[in-house]
Length: 627
Image (cartoon, rainbow, N blue to C red; front, side, top):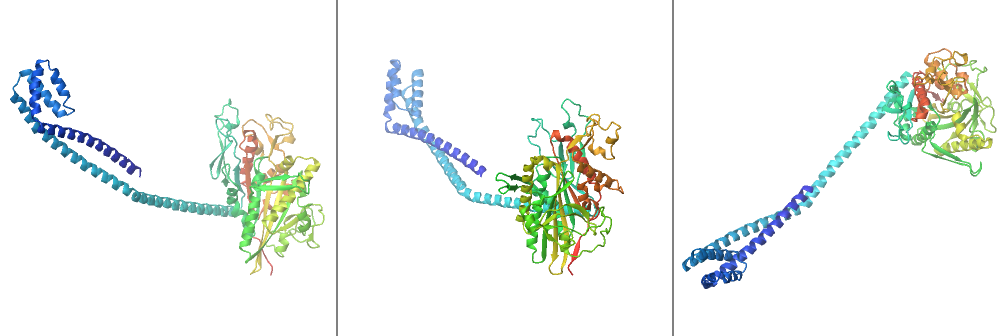
C-alpha cells in the first residue's frame, strides 16, 4: 500500500509537469501562429518597415527602435526584424534581401508550428496515458488492499495458531517434567525443596541496591557474597556460591505459579498419600504469604465486630479450593469428606486455635485416639506395614476416642501421644468438618480474629508473636468409592515455621564466636550452616529454640544416626510422622534479597541444601474398606 501510494504521488508529479510543459508549448504555438498570420495578411508592412527603417537609420535608428517595440511580443517577428536591421545597418543591402528574409520567415514558421503541434500531440498522448494509468492504479488499490489484508490476516492467524501450539506443547512438556520429577522423588523418598526468592524493591546499579541472589535456571540459584561487603572491600576472593534445588521460582512469581508446581504433589492426598508442606525462612521473607496469602485482622468493633479479609490466596487456600472443585466433579462416583485442625506452637507450648471459636464449639469434635500406655509411645506400638484400619471414619477423626467421638464442649489439655498404629496425634485437639471453600475461610477468620483479640488483651505485638510461633494446619481427606466401598485416607500438613532469624552465640562477639573452647559453645557437626559465609569467623544460633532442634534432627537424619532427637522439641515431635517415613515432604524455602538479611539468607540456603539430603522413604497409599 505504501509503494502504491508513492507510485501514485510520482505519477501526479509527472502529470503536473506535463501540464506545465503543455501550457508553455501552447503559448509558443499561439505566438507563432499570430506572427505568421500577420505576415501573410500584410506583407507590405514589412516593405514600409524596411524603407522607414532605412530612413530612420539616417536619423540614428530611433524610429526603427520604436517601430520594433510596436510589433508585439512575437519572438519570431522580433528575430526577423533584428536580422533585417543588422543586415541593413551593416551592409546597406537592397530591398530584395529584405524580401528574401520575409520568404525565409514564411518557410520557417510553418515548420516550427508543425514541430510544436507534434510535440503537443505527443505530450497530450503521454498525459492521457499517465491519467489513465493513475486512474487504473487508484481503482486497483481497493482490490490490492483486500488482498494484502487477507494475506496479513492469514499470516497473523498462522502465527497465532503456531504460538498456541507451542504454548500447548510447553504446557504438556512442563506437566510431563513435573510428573517425572515427582515420580523420581517418590522413588527416592527424599525431601523436595522449592526456593522462592522475595523480589527486591528499588533494585538497580544507580541506587546501589543489588539483589543478594540471582536465578540462573529453573533449579539453580546463585548467592553473591561480594554484594554483602562494603564498597571499599576487596571482593575478588569471594566468588558467588551456587545452590541446586528441585525448583527455583523467579522473583515476583505469582501464587498461581507456585500452586501450579506443587499441585500434583498436594492433590495426591486425594489418592491416599500423606503430604507435608513446610515454609522455611526468616521473618518477612514471605512464608505466610506463600502458604496463606495476605490477610488483615480488624478489631475496630471489638471481638463481636472484628473482621478479617484474605486476599491473594496462598497455597493452602488454593489447594482447598481445588479439592472442593474436584470433589464436586466426581460426586456421583466418590464421597469425599474433609476435616481441618489448626494447632499453634509458641514457646514449646501447644494451643488449639479452634478452641473458643463459634464454629469449633458447634461443629468441632475432640480427638481422642487409642494411645499407647507409655509416654514415649513404645508400648503397644505396631509397625506401619501390614496394619489394618477399621474404616475411613476412624482415620478422618484420627481414631475414635475410648468413649466415641464427642462434640466439643470445653477445650482440654493438649498432649502429643502415639496411637497403637504408630501415628502421632494431639489428644484433645478439635477437628472441624468442612463442606465448602467458604467454610474453610470462615474457620480461619474465626481462628485469627480470636487470636488477635487474645493478644490485644494481653498487650502482645501480633507481628512479633507470629514470627515466634509455628502454625500447623492439617487437612484430612477421606474418599470413598460409592460403587465398591473402597476408600482412601490422605493427609496434608501445612507448616508455617517461625522466622529463622539468627543471633550471635551467647557470650561471644561475632568476630570471635566459635574460637573459644567453652563447652556451652561447643560446635556441632553441622554448625557450618550457622557460621558466617563471609569467612570472618562469626558463629550464630537460631533465635527460636525449636528451629535449632529441627536442625539437629535434619543433621541426624543426614548422618543416618540411630538416635534422632525428635522429642527435644514440641515442633519436631509433632512433625515426627512427616520426617520419619510414609510421607511426601516439600520444603518451601523463602529467602530475602536484602543486604541486611544476608546472614539469614545464606543460612537458609545451606539449611535447605542439607534438608534436600534427608531421605524420608517411599510414600505408600492408604486404603480402607467398609466391607
